[in-house]
Amino acid sequence: MLSSQKKYLVIINPISGTSRKTSLPELAFNMLSDNDSELYFVYTNGEGHADRIIKDIAGQGFDTVIAIGGDGTINEVANAVRPTDMSLGIVPMGSGNGLARSLDIPLDPEAALEVIRRGYVKRIDCCEADGVPFFVTFGVGFDAQVTASYDQKNFRGPLSYVLSTVDQFIKHKSSLYRLHLNGEVIEQKAFLVTCANADQYGNNAIIAPDAELDDGLFDVVVIRDMSLLKAPQVAISLFTKRVDESASIDIYRTDHLIIEREKEDYAQVDGELIELGRRIEITIQKQQLPILVPLPKS
Image (tube, rainbow, N blue to C red; front, side, top):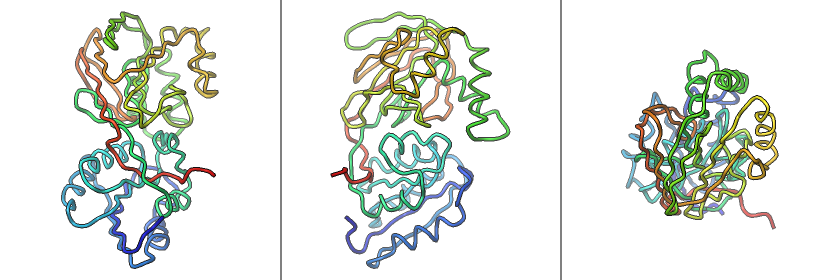
């Protein structure tokens, strides 16, 4: 529950999402400023700005940093909050909202602010891919290429993502991967390899139905075959929480993974595009990030 005299830093990405962005500061102030609580609002002006803001205010008595934006903004803010004694609050405004959906944080801004006001702190794991942090998913292969295509579109949103997916389904070819995990070496030609800390990419596309955000483990999902005949079945399984039943998909669980692939290429971390080498190391740190989530249902 909310105690008196809370001090909030509200970080807003002005270009993510479209709905109610201009009214959010007033809404947040009205909902969170009781009991003499203090709110400070900052708009980001580019990649890395949120990280610099949080480093600047560390040690100044803030209790909670509230991230208003999409998955990329939330990833950056979460990683900056992680080494501090502050908690993270989320008002999801992106196209996928993978972390918010995985934690049952409402997509409606007012309801999300109510979670920040009356929720409780849950500590979740943080993964890293060659030192690059992620809290939701990391992927190489098809999902990374979709992200690259999406980033090149002139407009954002579900339609753009669908077009990027179709485009890359036509163009993308499976690659050979060597996976080192749990004392085994698995060599497999695959359409994609995804490491899932959360259960989904976003938009309720459930890539790892049994993944838990606080167990110190991540799921490694390997989609071997995405032929024209298999694609509808795989797509349906994503949105019916039945990926683990597909004959085209293998799922492993581990706390450490090394991926070897054919060449340097793209990867996606929480929906953001990066480039990494042929060898990628994935690690996890258990319960690193304190985040405000809804109270358990009684």
